Amino acid sequence: MGELYRWREQDLIDRGQADGAGSQASAEPTGAKKRIRDLEEEAEILRGAAAAVGEVVPAGVRFRLVAQLRVDGVRIGRSCHALGVSRSGCDERACRAPSARSIRSRLETRAVATIALMRHGHRLTRCRLASGS
Image (cartoon, rainbow, N blue to C red; front, side):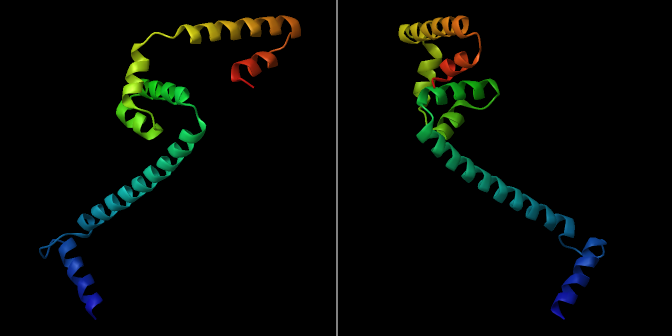
């Protein structure tokens, strides 16, 4: 009998014949709570994925990913935290010129790829060199 009374009261409120919060007003917080719960679950999944990435992907690649995310409008601090790299390391990499070693390595890779391409005449060798396999 109590539930029937509540339904009747809610109907009067919804029709404006009694004071109180309408059905629509009580549905909005429920939808917001569901959205918050979904976002919290998604954040937890992404934290787990970021931890797995941190174990497998070298820091240099993660720093480059932070730079790409910055171009997409993601805040640097947020992406550094999610990918497990330091903010100071991101700032340092963004401000410094490429090292002589990295420049030499790129030039050597290109030279070897060019020679392999001329000798073997296919792109597979070039792809393998670029990926490091």
